[in-house]
Each structure stands twice: as structure tokens, then as C-alpha cells.
Length: 122
Image 1 (cartoon, rainbow, N blue to C red):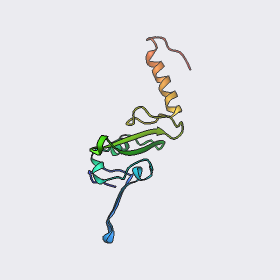
Image 2: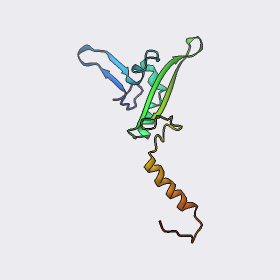
Image 3: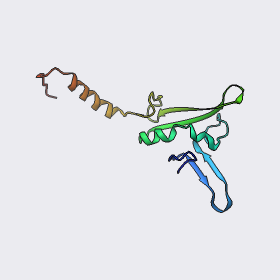
Image 4: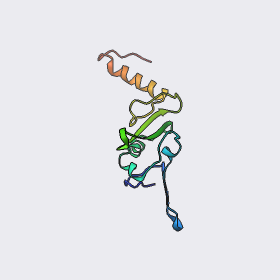
């Protein structure tokens, strides 16, 4: 669904049918440690960009909205991890790499590092 910032995000929900006025971010809604979400938070949120760059179904996101010192500014803190390994992801835009893909990349890297003319059969 399109956010108030104009980006597509599967975690955003809105309903204005027959007089309803519901707008919510389900990532912030599912986090009890987060403050209440506001539509203005979508302007600075990087979740839609991450979801656009990475379509891995094992990627998990958690959004926490906190007030900074004196409550003058709202901070969006995003935690990203892989479902299978439960380990944090260093770069959210590239996301999770499964062990099978990682094994294939290792074979490719070894082939690139081998000196020319040194062909080994596998």
C-alpha cells in the first residue's frame, strides 16, 4: 500500500472507507517498546526502500520509534535479522544470504582467485 510519503510499503495500512480514518504502520504497532506511530514518520523511514531493494522472504524487520532528548525529535530505529539464523544483518539493503548461495559464491571466488592456466577439476 502507498504510504503518506508516496512509497510502497507492505507494512503500512490505511482505511478511509465509509468514514473510517485508520492509518497505521504494522511494524511499529507490533513492537510494544515503540511509541505511537504518526504519518509524518513515513518521510524518514527506510523500510520501503529496503523492501524494494531486497525481496528475501527470510528478512525480518522490527521498527522502534523513540523520542530523542527533551522529546524534540523522533528517532526511528530499525533492527534487521534473518529468520533462519536469528543473526543481525549488517547491510539491510543486501539482506540475508542463504548458506547454499554463500557456498556457490565461495566456489566462484575461488575460481577468480586461481592463477591463469591452473585448471582443477571438481
